[in-house]
Image (cartoon, rainbow, N blue to C red; front, top):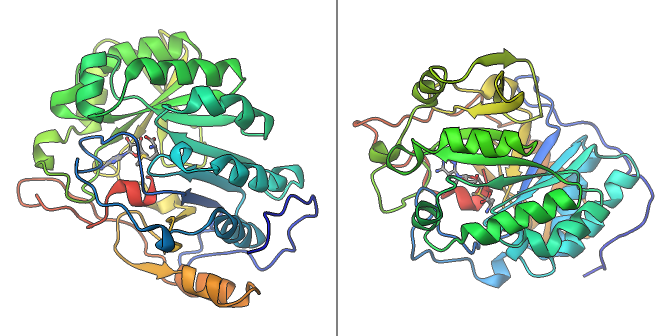
Length: 345
Ligand code: SAM
């Protein structure tokens, strides 16, 4: 396998990716591992079986795959997982991909993390040109945090966030809204994030994969959360766009931004600009649909990117208009069989 490229030559450009609905595909999320050091109750079952190593793309292959998308007009790369920072040598991938920042081929290289390893890596991430990270924190109560993550340590995550901020990274906190777990946690999360200059985004739990629990018990519509918050906080809609699906309000009392990601109560597909690739090289054109394309076979079949680019074209031509997640008593089973940890959200 060729060593990871670190050159500073721009990527030779190929025709940009546009889906059948005229949406330009400019954002790629890459799950670099299916493994995680947490077992969040809404995300994974406790006894997950992980992929054998031979099925997982090497870091060099992941770099080649990402770069093939950059050649097609992708301007934003987000590394996710599983937990991206538990993948061995992941920083060599970040280093390789950061060449696209230097050449101006991409606008942003970022990652979504649970924060457990951030204290170790924050400085290097900042040095490599990463400017923003999303960190998932569902509650500030250490006991509940352990309950929801099963294995997580809030103190370690807080130290990771502090290190990220000290390194100059902008931190956005993501919290999944869960009825019995954190319905009472949002005021504290707003005060903490906004009080320290961070943004907060709340996410509706999506029916993905068997987690050994009934999702109708966990589901908390963000329409209800927002209505409740509005009894205590002044929320002004703002037109902020960060390339993702969140709709933002400004909280007048704090001056901070609060995002809502509402796949259930308000489908956000019309402006979808993204696709997701897993650590096995499977391309999902929609988070909420089963259809996928194997990019690993064409990637491994040839040293030239021709077969890979042809497979990408074929897949993008099938990108669906949107997802149709439903959680109610008639829809207790997952909408898609895979867990969120496969694609990383
Ligand atoms: N380990 C990293 C982390 O914790 O952020 C990255 C991967 S994690 C799968 C990405 C995000 O997806 C996290 O914010 C997590 O809370 C969220 N998530 C996981 N399962 C979800 C589900 N079923 N519905 C909504 N969000 C989910």
